[in-house]
Length: 262
Image 1: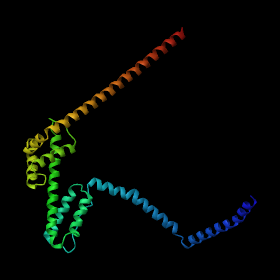
Image 2: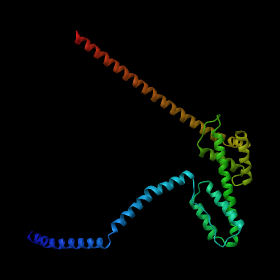
Image 3: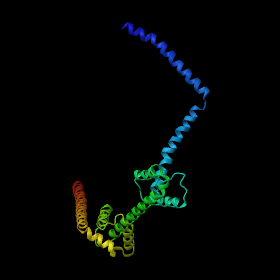
Image 4: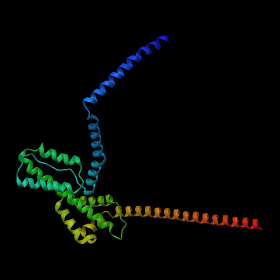
């Protein structure tokens, strides 16, 4: 016990000396760098400004404008006007819909690293045709979904269900990747709407599946309606019971007050 107290007593001066030495060093550092704390505050303020204000605004702007930071580039050696026009068209189609980053990275890798310079124009044209077909197919799907859900004869269905119906019909006629078939179907749908051949054939091809989905949704909507009606009815009964209870209390109070006055 005595030995430990002696060790602690002798260690205290050393600790005090170390603290004084550290304090003097820190003070000397701030004397030599009087603006150090000011710079630290500036850096901290900039950090907060970027992550609390600028970054959320950029994310909001990107969401509102549906902007995609996906742009394909070519090696600087490629300067052909026709090739650059095809490149511009490819980037245009890539910007129309949300793209898979891995797919865009694959196109970039193929055109810049895995394709010889002399083969880039042909490879680029293939990617352009593929994206043009994909964009037209998505336009066709969106138009079909819009036309179907505007029909008063059927219940509106979820877009993914109708998308599967369109893809199923296109697969049956081998038109999924056929630009001519997609273009004709899209034009027919835009001009004739729900009376178009494409619309009628797509519905007929998926009639059983669409009827099953409609029946399922009708049951769900009916169940929800009954549930809400039950809740509303229970709420009305509760309010009526509370009102009658309050009237009964007031009546008893009036009786008690009448007896007291006698």
